[in-house]
Length: 539
Image 1 (cartoon, rainbow, N blue to C red):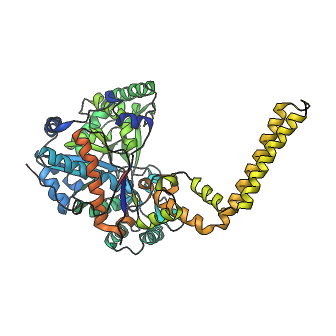
Image 2: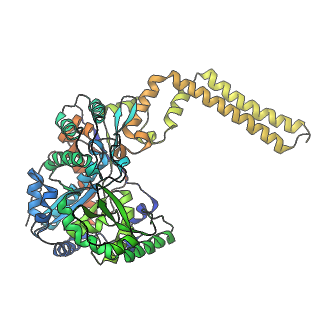
Image 3: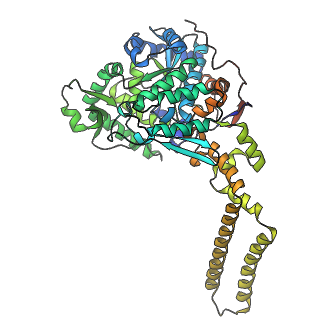
């Protein structure tokens, strides 16, 4: 099978996210070390701030296997560092973005390991304690004729963490759509892994973790299940401090929000007055503690425990793992402007955040469609432009000429009336008549073009197919499309190309150069072995 092209893209994001990545909001972020000496000094600081027994404490939550276990063991016991990233669960492993984040963490860990000469392992934080079912229950696949959304039915009360949400029988029909999207699947083991994990009766969080561990372990990436009891034990002391200092933390977040507004930005996470940054989990659901509840919270029973909100999670992660950096998407990067305020209020180290790599996969069949249509991938970002242009090109010369003539007659006839009428009708009235008739002609033209689109069904199907593969539902590919069909079609070669491209991005971060922003591309197989060769550990 011909190899696809992996294109490096601009990460995008909000005004705040883009400004922060450009270094314009340095007062709200822990500075990214620049150069070898800075990274070494920072790495020593991180290693000294976390218990050397962190893997013993969290081993059951990570349950590493194979090459992921080997690499993680080399970083344990105070000998090395980790690079983390994470995502809440998604159907069939979620969209490409989840895989891209994991590979970005692996690439940065490789680069730091090579630069610093100490072991650095990647860890993916699977946020199975997240309760956003709408986000976790959906993913899209690219099919002939466009993108198709796959969505599980909700079978648990609102506020139920994904670790406790059962998967229903409807997943079987969704699995058939996933199989259809994978096509002939020469690397069917990836598809089989997804179908084994996502079975009726399994918990959504467990399925997510199981699939990620099977797919990421060969890439030396460990997966931490945030809902595991050992995580709860490790995070309990910090969460108790967060409860005890809930008022001070809330005030710090409020002040930071005001400062962000004052600079003309919008905080990524909206402050909810009166609420703390801690969830209380009890009886299978979770609720956010109010400040009043936090102030009066006593000892918890055996069936209750605390967990984090999004602004507290990175601080917690940095406290229980020797995290050199968290690899973030654009929205996450924006909310780290508020995370540092939380860390300061708690008196804990602020985590370093770095931007993840961003990409698009252009498959050969999609490139052939683009070539046939005479457009580039970027043209499909506009939801209507290509269809409109193609429809106009299909208009007969007579129809196109008639529409132009109608417009010309309106303009010339109104001008003639204006000249010959000697002011009998005021100019504003004539202008209004002209605009009204031109508007009706525009509506007529849209109906003509709509008729052409209906007639040219095959042409429109090709456009929809290409758009569904590159900009599904009008969004970047990596934010919507499931990654399993891509892996089923292209296998380790695709992973090799992704790791190689992500490593170029990681090297720019460690060296202190600006992160990659302009689109670039490489075919799979450009760096053979990069996803499967273990980076040497120098202890």
